[in-house]
Length: 191
Image (cartoon, rainbow, N blue to C red; front, side):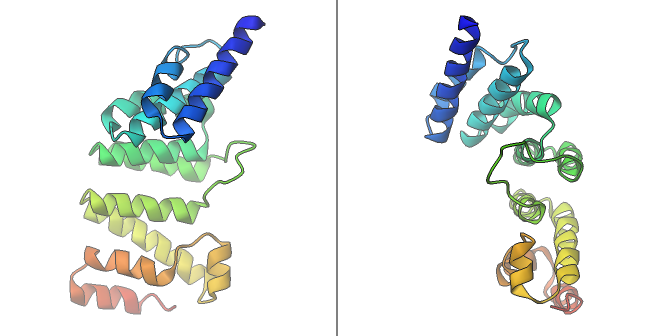
C-alpha cells in the first residue's frame, strides 16, 4: 500500500509540474510509471509524458505515450491530443483515424472543463491548415459549416453548442479557397 501511495504522489507531482509548465520535470517524474501494471497509473503517466512532450513541440516523441494513453483510457480529449500531435508530426492519415475517435468516445469522468466537439473540430481544422493539409482542412470546415447550418443564425444557440465565432471561423476558412470559390462556399452557408 505504501508503494502505491508513493507512486500516486509521484504522479500528482508530475501532473502539477505539467500544469505549471515544467515539462522536463513532468517527463522525468512520469516516465518511471509508464509501464506500470496498474491501469490508472499507466494511463496517467503515459498521458502526462505525451502531453509534456507535445507542449515542448516534440511531436514525434509524444506519439508513443499518447497512443498508449488512448489505448488504455479511450477518452475524447486524449484522442484529440493524439490527432493534433500526428498532424504536427506530418502524419495526416493516422491523424484522421485518431480524430474519428473523438466522435466515438466520451469525456473522462470528472473532467470538468471539456471542450465541446465543435471546438475540437475547429482547432483541428486550424492545425490542418497550418500544416498545409488543405483538402483535409476543407473537409473539416464543411463539417463545421453543417453544424452552423443545423443550429441556425442565433449566436446564443451557436455558443451553447460550442461553435466558434462565425466571423472568426469564416476568416480562418477563407484562405483555404480561391476567392471565387470562397464566395460560392460562403453563399451556401445561409447564416
